[in-house]
Length: 220
Image 1: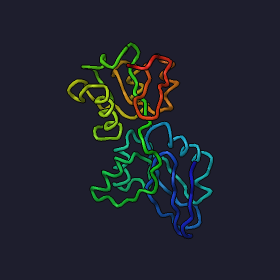
Image 2: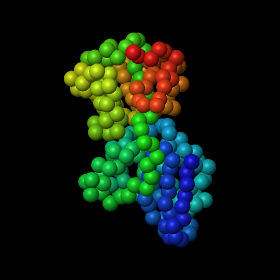
Image 3: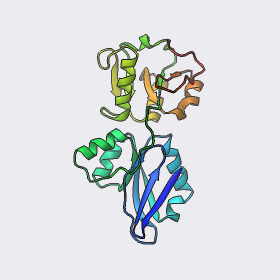
Image 4: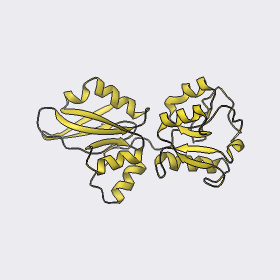
């Protein structure tokens, strides 16, 4: 859920559960124009869009313009460039921007573990069949890239040597590429579980405290 905390009449902090947001000062009592950048299709993005469409932000002084981009890296770059004043994004991309001297502040981080699923296209019977094939990420250096390389190593392979990692875009773009046969594996958000089952993709997870969610057998 979204929580808005009034700090003083001229300032508001907006926090979104499921991700993180950059601090933004809102002046004036009337709704203030605010460009808000986001990426992805699940998790906190759904909460943000639902609240936006329901007029939640306007009631609390923010007249949002939603800006959609295709990766967390671009999300951070959009805020740093001044194109948007606030954002929901992945922690790695925001920390990288802060380390480079960006004038921004992280107000909330609510996910303390990987919660993504790793998906193989229909026809992939076991992890070994990914060897020599293409695995997609949003952009090199993004959180999906970091997670994907972690997964590949957990599966007993070495990124770049045993599998080819390619830039495709966020979960929606990776799903389309997977369905079209352009890639053979990719990280997906949990909201794509039904899509995985409907398309015959092999959907599973190796992350702690998670369980197999596919109608297919888990890879052993």
